[in-house]
Length: 124
Image (cartoon, rainbow, N blue to C red):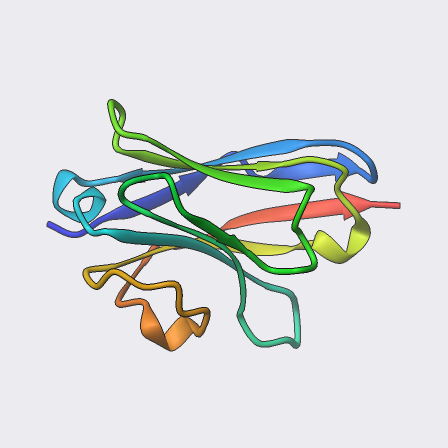
């Protein structure tokens, strides 16, 4: 069964940190490409970060580079998004995604499996 479940969202002040987790079923975690996207009210879903299964290669949107870190915990079938120096513009619903193909494409349409999302709100 393909399953992705996000957790770790919440309300934080600007400059603070949050750690998002994406628990994946074993079948989903075996997919080589996993990513995080976000969607703010009235905006399209946008790419945040991705990682391929080797965990040696990652990709980040310019808006989060240097502040966010994506990683995989292979023992727990979990993908982590560590978010530091948060800004009000980071407020959005954050989604975990997976794809059975190995790639660094940033379009949401390139990912075939999605979680339900977790809300992140950054107050000024």
